[in-house]
Image 1 (cartoon, helix red, strand yellow):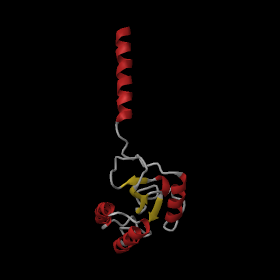
Image 2 (cartoon, helix red, strand yellow):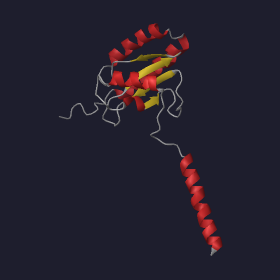
Image 3 (cartoon, rainbow, N blue to C red):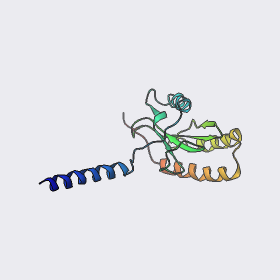
Image 4 (tube, one colour):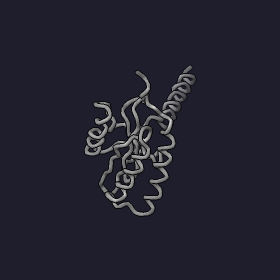
Length: 149
């Protein structure tokens, strides 16, 4: 009887440990508070108090949750909030005002301003251009509930 109980507890323990190792599909990048506040201020132009600065994804690598130089998307808590993007480079941030689903041309125009403002090198320009193009392509037909009255 004891052997059965020991085996049962070991099985439960093994499953518990393995369950913690399975990746969390809703895991987000944790940004510093200073960046969080800037993202919140920028997103409040779209919708207020939606905790957008805590809902950040790395657009270069969705499985990378460490905040560092790169391009990221962020949105309010919930799938009905539109995504916005920002680029963080050498402790400087450029937050796009345009929303890819509603204004792809504006997003591309802002990227040109970002290149100048952050003085991005050629490799980053090429890499970020592709990521932004993919982001806009994905967002193209999304309306985020804008047609719901």
